[in-house]
Amino acid sequence: MAFELAALAYLIDSVFGEFRCKHPVVWMGEFISWFEKRFYQDRILPGTLLVVSLVVLTLLISSTLVYLSEGLASWLSLILLAVFASTGLAMNMLHASVAEILTAEQPKHALSFLVSRDTEAMTETEIYKAALETWAENLSDGVIAPLFYLVWFGLPGIAVYKAINTMDSMIAYKTGHYFYFGKTAALVDDIANFIPARLTALLIVLLAQDKRRAWQCLWRDGHKLESPNAGFPIAAMAGALGVALGGDAYYHGQLKHKQVLGEAINPVNKTVLAQALAMKTRIDGMVLGLLAIGAVLT
Image 1 (cartoon, helix red, strand yellow):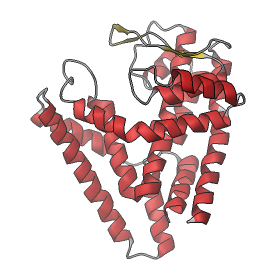
Image 2: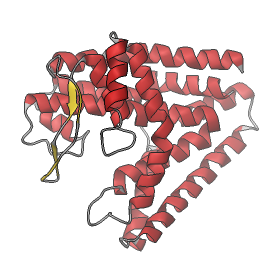
Image 3: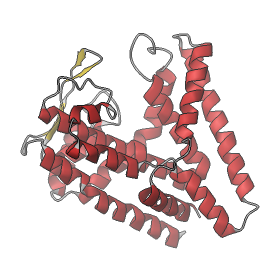
């Protein structure tokens, strides 16, 4: 039932997006904030205790939901679990959020909600470059990785993954405040995303018009970023579009030097961003097709 569950959850997210209720990630964020206020010390041990606490709590709640659903009719259990699982997927929201940059009167303001880098002084090219990188990287974090863990481990798998990813986004910063406190969260997130990031990159290559260029860029540049995972989908996207991504950027007022991924064959502009976002239809078809094949074969 794993593939059927994943396919239905993906369809629910595609059609309905975020439900108008308190999102599970918000609950996770509130737990992280509570724990930090009560137990914070910039040491590895308190940060590790946070990771263990949230993972165990998430596992218990999600496993209880699965257990309770077993008393229902199989079709009803599938639907309910798929609704819960869909909250861990973000294709609808990700696509809409990035697409908003194409129509926003103030693209920098719209972008500021999506990235951690400074946006005030960005040029038009830098805005669209950051949007492309966000689209590529979050195809892994928000779509492929959650699906991967949903298929393999059911609702507890996707729930635990979202807990890990939420901790990474909140405390895994190499700054003075979180330098040691967030180390375990960052390490666990790197491990959790190792396979999904590379699967996402391969998916982008398969859907690229120039597959050879996308593959060459992925092979050559995927490992060049500081993150062990983020560079792979970004490099694949750069090759697929024939653009240069990455490069220096400002974070919290500090210039961070980053390698350039891809080649500047085409300019990074609104047209290229629209082309990247248009891949969604093909991604949807490929993902649902693979899940359907998995359901038939299992």
